[in-house]
Amino acid sequence: MGLFVAVVAICLAAFLLRILHSILFSPLRHIPGPFWARFTNLWRLIDHYNATQIITQRHLHEKHGPAVRIGPNAVSLSDPHLIKTVYSTRGNFLKSDFYSVNDVVQDGHTIQNVFGTRSNAFHAKYMKPIQKLYSMKNILEMEDAISKTIILCCEQLELRFVNGMNAGKTCDIADWIAYLSWDVVGEITFSKEMDFLKSGVDVRDTILTAESVMHYFGLVGQMPVLDKWLGKNPWSPIKFRTFNNVAGYCVERLIDRVSTSNDSKPPHDFLNSFIEAKAANPETITDNEVVGYLLLNMLAGADTTAISQKAIVYQVLKNPSVLAKLVTEIDAANIPFPATYATTQKLPYLQAVIKEALRIHPPVGQILERIVPAQGLGLPDGREIPSGTIVGMNPWVVTRNKEIYGEDVELFRPERWLKGEDETEDIAEARLKIMKDLDFAFGGGNRICTGKNLALAEMSKVTATLFGRYEMKLVKQDWKVHYWWFVFTDKIKIKLSRRNL
Image (cartoon, rainbow, N blue to C red; front, side, top):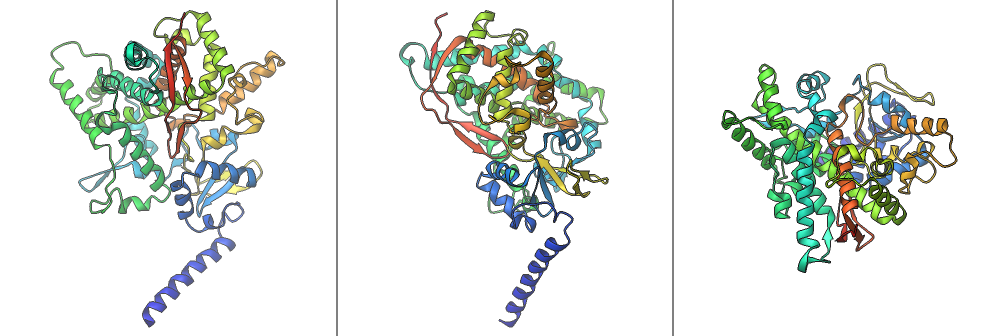
């Protein structure tokens, strides 16, 4: 008993000394924040577990200003003007160990990937051979594959919810948007849809797995040391979903393509481009890297696009005036079916709708963590954040900055992205340039989301096609939102019918 009491006393004394040290000597003691966040990352782990981190961080920034301490060595920033500093193209603010949770352990060795690596050299080495593949030019060279999948989606929607005995049947359009996004990724990556649309179900539980993996990533990333005892511990009593089934699918497609490579002219898709990159860079790219690239497409191309497209549909249907303006613009343009990307670029209100959806519902709902470099970080108010501190910005906080976006930041108002009736050309141009320069929906700098151009092309085509072809009405005004690392949504119940044009 005496030994037990002594151990408890020592632990308590150590904890109290840590509290005292943090209060008196921590280099972050001048940064305000929740009391317990000064001493343990358990505070933000619990906040994320409760799915309240977005509300919490917005409240804390409203109370304390542009810098809030959310961990013993972590600071959340909200000033949009710091985006180009923290997320610069130079990449001098490296990713934190938060992203180590995304690493894979194979035969006892940790394998990094281009998304999660903390090394700029690693990222540059493996992204350079494939970087151009994610340009808008290359994405549009595969536009026919996107159009083919949109046509299939419309056929399935009409078969199941519009035509014959199924007319008037309630449709959860959130599910079908997810199926569409995943099948688009299948088409442009493998020249083969993944059968989500044809089957009308989550094939191989791929979507469920992706959501579960990203939920684990965002939660455990608040205290990355836990990952060694949980997800990366082969003896952990708790089993977590992994991307193994998706990785297996990628391996199958790679083997099939290589085995038939001499039979005919290879299709223009990402898989063939990755194989060509491997042939051109044999010392850098192996089959493992090719599979990693394929998984990157799954990660960067499907979920983020689906999240944003769901936000577009839901927000437009919730706002009748926006719906009316959007449909009027689409009708006046007399666009083809499905809409081409080129025609959608001539629809300013549609593009404003997309930008506003990305503002009010960014895909990521947690700070994008970076490490302050050796020179430190100077805040606009003169305070200094020392080297080695974790800093980051939450898109859900930054995109609600009233100085940039106006007092009505909680409203879905696409007009904020257009010239106002009372604005001069010069004033409107200056205002819109600031909003464009501070865009943070896809992150920023040298680690910006590789799926950005695919998402923008797909959203433009899908939005114009759906609202041009169908009349959609919400059955319920509410949808279900999951405030995790990715802010997933579901349960958008609608009635669907063909428009009388």
